[in-house]
Image (cartoon, rainbow, N blue to C red; front, side, top):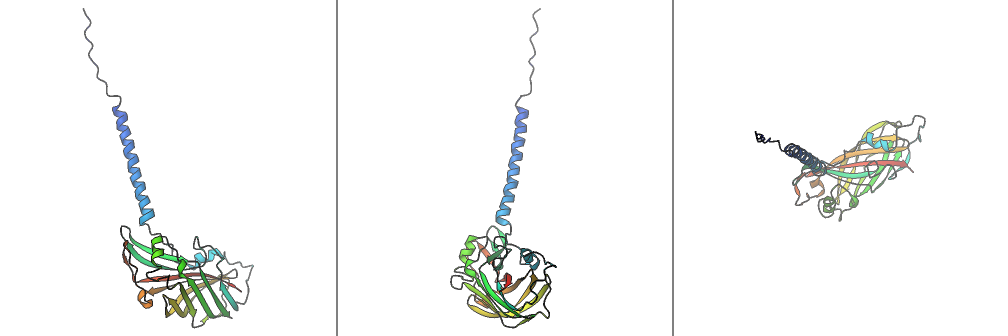
Length: 258
């Protein structure tokens, strides 16, 4: 008898499973890329990039901790000058004066606008345990932030650094520390004086914290500034939805004895 015809055997396509697996892999990679893109957008666009506010404990790290074996200069009497060689402006561990203002940007949302300059000079005269004179000058024309457009805008808007490049503080009442602070001891004081900003001079009281560490007097402080008090108009820009009508002026100074 002739052989019966063979019944055809249907095998599963050899490409079906691999293709399905391949699509799962492609889909997984695409999903991962979306997540990474979202993280990147948040990090570079939406994340608030303003540095932390000034802090005395952080500032003293630039001069080290108090050395009990080195009692320091003893008497504080004399003239002390702002020393810009301590720390670095790159990581804000050195001397600077700056501002912080809350703003809302198109497509970004609420952020803290900031700007800082290391170009600060000044002197402080101490007699015993009393600071009798303090004069500090900051060059606002060299303020730097994380936004080039902001740095350019304040030249002819807001604080108008092209017209008013300097901000100054002059002490008008002595600061009595009661006794000479020990090395490493934090002291909180109110400095009463005049602040000149945007060509306008006002009486102010600046809360300060200070520490004497390794023959360096470290000073930090911040003061609320209402724009209207200094004739400052809020800046206008296409990408700025809103900006507060006040901000904070902050300072971090290192004084060494002359």
